[in-house]
Length: 175
Length: 101
Image (cartoon, rainbow over all chains, first blue to last red; front, side, top):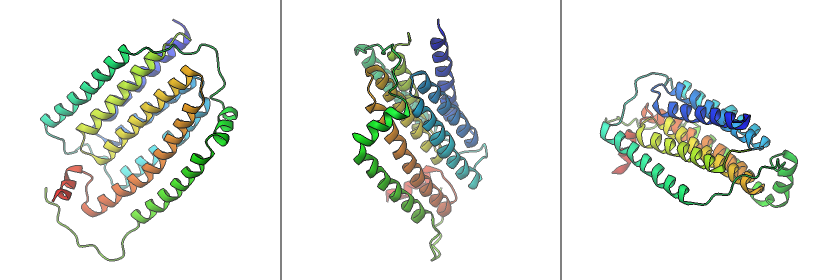
């Protein structure tokens, strides 16, 4: 068992355990921290697969920006309480069973499929120089379109997030 | 590198299933959103594994675009959740079944 295999199994166990922590923990702040741990272990997998650029982007964008945004929202709404209304036992059981059935079906499909083994020679396709060349030659148009997408998302977030001037009719929440 | 890419398929499938279970069983809107992010990340892992398998850089750029779209999606989605909290003072998705009528 060489160092790659040991690292692979360690990172996989970390990813799966912290992913389970996301859905099992009662406190939303703990869920966010578990998800950050999952993203870090996925970044470790990227480094193992020689995709250094994506590993760094994953850490910066996901663990650095997106999860901090989640954490801000949770702190802003003061949701770090352990009490949370739970779904009924039957609905939870149905959710777990349907997720498990999906897992089993795709697992059977994967076992039947023929997967080539990974190329053993070390490639440098994951480096910034190589990815930048492909990005700005073959995928220029999607890149530009994604900048328009970002602009519209930014405007949309601001428009949705602003308080409306006219006081809205407060609707009574019926539970 | 002796790690077969089938292992990566299993791992990302497991993460995806965990994300689906979380989406189906929780009622907190923020946690459901986080489970969707988990599913996106499992697909990213699968794409990178395939990129390594075929020695092709296109899949890694797809991962890059998925990250771009996810960032935009999170900005809008969290704005919607904050707006919902401002209106009904809760982020329980069961309250939203008022939209049914």
